[in-house]
Image 1 (cartoon, helix red, strand yellow):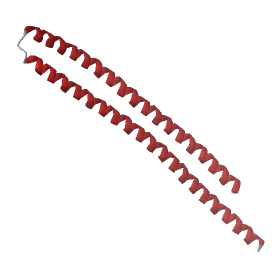
Image 2 (spheres, rainbow, N blue to C red; image 1 turned 45 degrees about the vertical axis):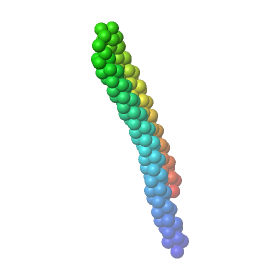
Image 3 (cartoon, rainbow, N blue to C red; image 1 turned 60 degrees about the horizontal axis):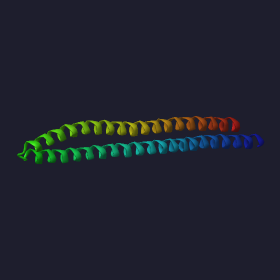
Image 4 (tube, one colour; image 1 turned 90 degrees about the horizontal axis):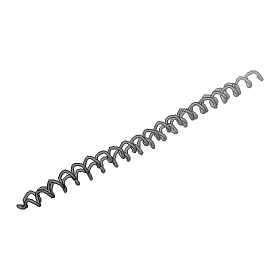
Length: 142
């Protein structure tokens, strides 16, 4: 009868150990998914900001085209010269602004990627630690 009781307790401990490993695995997966979700959300916000900046750049181009169109309608040679100068300056500024926008967008994306990869590394580390804890719990109870 004592052997049966001992076996019963051992069997319950093994079942509890397995349940704990299952629970710890689910917790680790939830933590991993939460970290990935946050990284993707930050990436999405950065991508949306890049799109907004591109739209602003297009609006600026439209304004410059309207200005150029008005200048073309002026009959005076001086106005034409000013228009020509403004167009070349506009193109130069557009090139500069495009480079700046590209740098800003790349900095944002690079930062988002670094944060994402850091989060992934941290999640992997946490899963490793939780796996070791689960093994220790399993070994102690066996």
